[in-house]
Image (cartoon, rainbow, N blue to C red; front, top):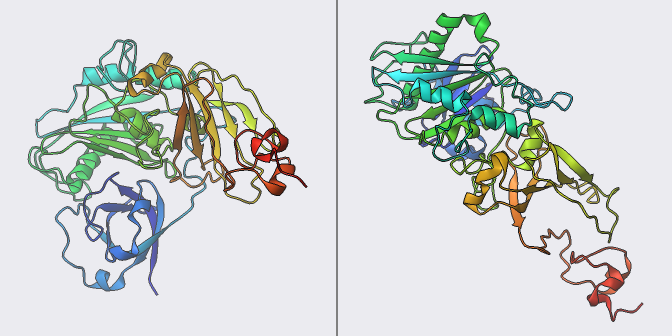
Length: 457
């Protein structure tokens, strides 16, 4: 029998260290962080280890009693040695950013602009403030680039004003933080200069020090009103990467950027902040980051809002029309005129295949994306002025934070057709020609289909 311990996981999006080393941290119910080391990597599915996920781990008693030698990247006083883990469904996991009565949730944040040992931050305070709030262009490319673009305009335009009243300086403060060249945090983590060190233990130590500076400056009560923590860490010897919690668990969430993440584009901000609001990566069937129509796929492309399923998940957009077996009879056609996704809040068609009774069938989202407004950069990727088709299971399984939208295709030419057959039949024949269904998904039913021309009863 093994002791089970429950907690929240912190991890980089792409932890480079092996599972047998401490690439992860476990936050317990009191908020204390411990190194998390898996002693049996063969029992662990690393793809499910995403930041912010609530997990239950099985303690390795033998390793706990006789701890093995650890990597120097371990950063906390205590270490949890685990054999394996299981995900814990926490119904309140995304409560902070689920729409309330159809209205988007407010966004509030404390940004820690961190410098180490006099090295200076990766972006100066004035530029960061402009990227957040100033309508004057400071970005040369990326999702916030172009005249009049900023993080404020991104939230305002893409949410149709739903969060514009809260994304203001009073609700989103920036705290410059200087980390000393040496010393320790209150938890005992060693502070080392970024010019020479940038392991995960260093990054978490800098973040802990930044938290203590903000706490001393504003006080616990004042800081409690800000849901998000955004850490912009120094470059020094670091590479360039970012990571974030997916959703708030249940009242804290953070996003972290490390190194020189191309601050001419600020592409990491809409991507990582999207994670804290509960959004997963947006994929294609072959690439986890393959959806170029949203910052949650390609964060470095030009101005674009989130895709239709993500806009809906945040409460920023809603269906123009819902299609189910009740509203779309077999063999019938339905004509819908789609406005641009960024032109009005009711903008996309949502198809829920209720005719597949009992099946866990994903919902389809169909949207039109003209290169206007905050979608003006879609043309850079060849995705503008086209109908986009996504599928998403989150609507059916809202507690599963690891479900990600899937971009299936685009329609650009007049008369273009996209289909997702639910039958394996390649042509209608025999009894199929008398059942009132379009069995081969070619848009023609029974006697309308040439394949049924010579079928007799």
